[in-house]
Image 1 (tube, rainbow, N blue to C red):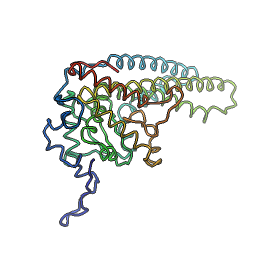
Image 2 (cartoon, helix red, strand yellow):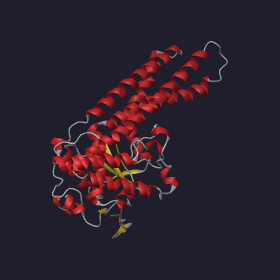
Image 3 (cartoon, rainbow, N blue to C red):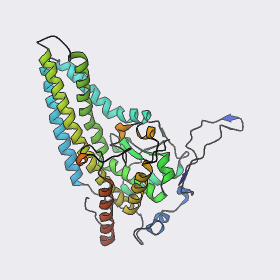
Image 4 (cartoon, rainbow, N blue to C red):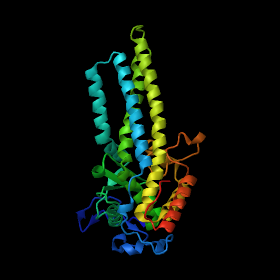
Amino acid sequence: MLRVMDPPAKVRGRSRVRTGLQGIRLGGASLAALPLGKFSANRFGGFGKMSCMARTSSFGKDTGLQARMLVTMFLLGALYAALVAALFASGASGITILLVAGGLLALQLFTSDKIALRAMGVHEVSPQQAPELHAMIERLCIQADLPKPRIGVMESQMPNAFAMGRSKKAATVCATTGIMELLSPAELEGVMAHELSHIANRDVAVMTAASFFASLASMIVQFGFFFGGGGDDDEDGPGILGLIAISMIVYVISFFLLQALSRYREFAADRGSAIITGRPSALASALLKIAGTMERVPQQDLRAHPEMNAFYIFPAGAKQSLFNLFSTHPPLEKRIAALQRLESQLQQGGGAALAPA
């Protein structure tokens, strides 16, 4: 359990900003003061004498994820080309298309994460404000051979975590106060290793770029209906209606491509967490706790930012849908089963290599 102690509003007559995030402690003990050996499986269960020393040589690349990201970007690129062709056919000028599309893409890549984090009320925390969380992530980054990302905390009862950013050097990992209060240090370590795996796999950047195509198509549909859908000009009408139809097709196909990629990348990040920490059982325990707690989280917290579901470690308000086609995450049972298989591989092979789930 994590304790959050608010600093006093004034100390000896000097004003101090109330962050609500200072004095964070994990499991009732200072994480920074614990030696690395304290986080061995003997303390938290799972793998006998196996410790969580660096396993960077076995992290490798998930070729399945890399192939899926490549195919997704190729297909989305093809859809985008068709959308641009439709824009030309509807009468839009090349300069207008270039300025609008290029500007929106740059905005998506370089500012979307900052806008999302600000909208969700995420506060970047310093090592002085959250020493244990910083110490944990710094150790995990050393083990995963990653540059240390910015670290944020979101004050919410919803137990969740996520990573955002366009590159390994421009990434942010965030945990809610709810997840830090709910999980043990070992479980939280598994969750944060999962988020760092997203950064290492670069799937966060791919999801950010890929979502641009769906966003652009959605905007064209909305503006098309608003400005051109009801026009009486017989010459321009068919062009606008055709553009709207193509944009809707692009949006629908983009949506399903992104959902499929999102589901697989969760398996890949679970595997990455298992490799970094050597404790798949800790992440499995964390997922079960999060799933059980979600049912008790106020509905207004679950509905606050539904567009972020694809980035969460566990979707808010997750429900089973037809063939899971509309789900951003694989079913919990499949994730737990995959983690159990990874645990068996670690026990049998000593963690030298883990096959993708």
